[in-house]
Length: 330
Image (tube, rainbow, N blue to C red; front, side, top):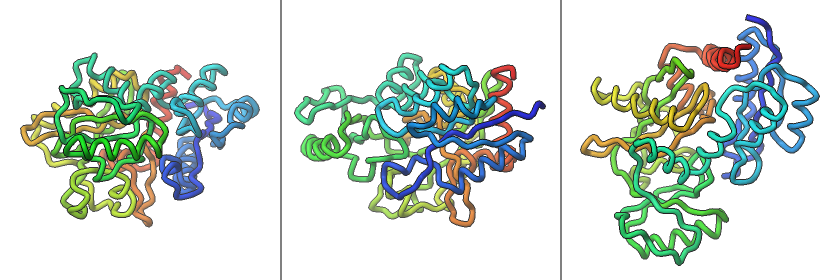
């Protein structure tokens, strides 16, 4: 394979602030850079800030490994893909439209519903005095509509009645300055499915969040407390313990979601299964986390699943690069 100049474009995590939790820590950036180099390519780095456009023009990479979460705005994950498409630079990962849709939880669910992919019923609140849709049933879970990594979500986001809904909704609208999604809360098992490829799409081993390992007060909400204060690789089961029939249904649902949202190269789909075995797609992440620091026990779902599939971290990065290289015919 021809040696390429591959630029990793991402946002560096510099603080433990809630709004930087999506950014890549320096250890992950270094690991991805090593993965690019071990694949036989030259690795460049570009910070995904206001200077990114000029840096892309200056460095002229052959391919960009896009990890940019963006710095502001409701379409922030689409900014770097838009720059790259404008400049004609190939990149790993989903395009402008997909990243924009997937950062909007309601739009994601609307697209999935159109494609007959089951997702919990929902309503979007822009003001606290809006009336609740009579078709919705409590309990509901409230989520900031344009945030990822469970930002703004904890166990108290599950509301049992209209009084609790009004109280929590008011606080969220004030704090996050964006609409709030209210969806029917699905009590049950939570599963995450990693996908790799395009035409020949590979489904990685399914990961399950083991809620029995978390404090009881967190309930079955995989929110910020679960992801930070109580995070441990011991809380996750990969591969998840599922019957062959159920595994195939979950994989099919994840593939249909990937296709419906027109994801490219890789993504992670989050699914809930209720006590009757019914499946609901919660969200799709076209920029799944790639943290894999074993010493600190800071492991993102996607590399856990890739390694469960028999890959090393470097092999995972190589596979992602190859997938994009083949898609562009480089």
